[in-house]
Length: 365
Ligand code: SF4
Image (cartoon, rainbow, N blue to C red):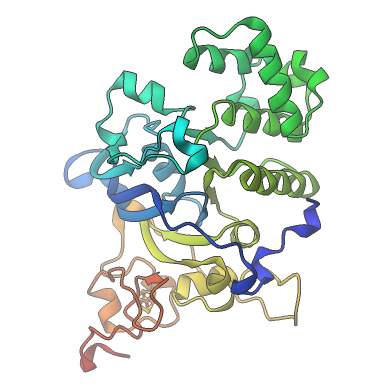
């Protein structure tokens, strides 16, 4: 697939691939705090999201919205002073040997309740993460084949050196890096190649979920498009699900099946990517969509979003977006809007008092 073939946001829903709706990763009421007691900052506040099998779910929002903290919490990579203070992350495990034939799905396991040994087996094998900066994630004093071999040996104790080399060559070729580069050190590779090596490592054990945390942000736009096209192709080939985190909504709309928008640690809207692009409902989502020019179709005026994201230590009462929202009315500064499913749109969740059928007449603007 070439870069120009990534055109999901402009495709009609009927043109989009049919999705399995089997839940794979259910995030329920996830709350992450920095600090303790009354001064604790809720970096992620009671978030519910479900990633379905073979789906690409995009998570977007400005810096500080909590999306990367959520990714680190889901993979249990959160470091102090960050702490998970509530919720569940339910993983629906499928027996690998039966995967080709549809697989046997066992009862979900709570990732947050796993012990160290269970976590070690869970990571890489079932969920793998690709970070923004491959230069920081790769070990600078080991060559590529040594790093891929480390991952393989940690999970396949009996694997031989020759088998590691063979698997490394296969993985590198899969992500578009010549196998001959397996003896290269990270500093000898371009930024795009390093990120491809990270993706190859993430795929080493054939995980069901790939978490991509700003995977292309450090790359120039041309390389970014190539790496994205590669990811789309790999997902189609291997069928893993993707939780794709970025501040760049325009990019997500190209690759994601569904998009969830976070603001100040909360989920404010989620819907199929096509609907987020063509019919955003939450004023914050509208602002994000209005912040980038369309690549196709008629020109439109860029609106952007005034102001800055709030300080999580002192959120405004009611809706955290109210100081920046052109639609704010009385209720917005009083009640925190809860996620609800609009009556005519079962695929969408939105947290906004506008058009809330549960609000009283006095509540409406
Ligand atoms: Fe704007 Fe009110 Fe909706 Fe918040 S709840 S986004 S302030 S209209």
